[in-house]
Length: 356
Image 1: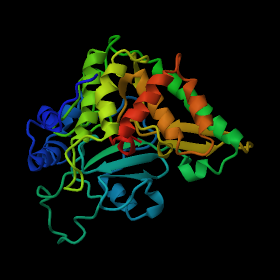
Image 2 (image 1 turned 30 degrees about the vertical axis):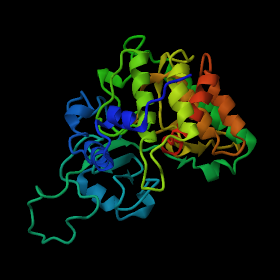
Image 3 (image 1 turned 180 degrees about the horizontal axis):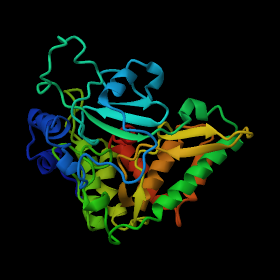
C-alpha cells in the first residue's frame, strides 16, 4: 500500500495555496513573466560583454548589419520565424550566426533593433531608453542544413546510421568531461540550471540547484511532475487524480531513488534534429559532416536523463531503432530500465510533449 497525498495537499506543498487563481498568478508572474529571471548577473560568471580569446575570422558585425539581415529571409536560420518569437538567428556573411533575443538568456548588447521598432520613428529620434532591450550572441556559422525530421526520414538507412554514429561519438566525448565533484548536478562554474527548464521548471521557481547530491536533484525532478498533476483546467477536469497519475505519484520516488544511471554526465538536453547541422561529404552519397548546435541547456545531469531523451526522441523518426542503438553506444552502461521508466512517468504526469 502507498499513501498518496490529496490534490489539496499537493497544491499546498508546491504553491502554498489551493486556490486556482493564485496558482495561475504564481505560474505566470513568478515563472514565465518574471522580469528578473534572465539577468546577466545570474546567467553567467563571465565578464559581460565577453569576447573569446584568440583571433576572429572576421570583425564582429555591428547592429546595422544585423538589422539588414532581418530583411533577408534567406539569412534567417530560425526554426520558428516571426515577431512572436523570443529569439531569432541570422546568418551574417557566411561567417557568423547571430542570435538576437528579447530574453537575457544570451549575452547582452544594447542598441540593436532586429524587429524594426525604429523604422516608423522620426530620423531625429535618438532616445532609445524606453524601447525594449535586446541581447545578441555572435557565434561561428556552421555550414549545412538543420537535419529536420522530414529530411532525415528521406535518407537511406546507411546515411541515417552514419549520422547517428557520429552523434554518438560526440556524445561520448561530451560525457567524458568530469563534473566538479562526483555528485554535482548543474551548469559550469557552479551555476544553477536554467529557469523554466523542461525537466525541472515548475512554476514559482527561478534557478534550480546546483545540486550536490542525487537525492536533491531527484526531489526537484519529481516535484516538477507533481506540479503538472495538480493543474486542472476548468470544471471539465475534476480535482481528483487519474489512475495514471496515481501510479506515478505512488511509485516514482520508490523506483528512482535507487535507479541505475545516477552518475552525473555532461548532457545536451535538447538534442533534437533541428539542433543538428549536417553537410554532405563531397564524393559520398551516404556520409555527412555532423555538428551539434544550441548548447543553452548544457549541464551535468544523471546519466539516465540523456538515455531517456534518446529513447523519446528516436520515436519521432522512421527506423527509430537505428538512432536508439547508435546513441546508446555513447554510454559505458546504458541505463535502459531507468530510461523506460522515466518515459512512462513523464507520459503519465502530462510532461511528455513538453520535454520532447
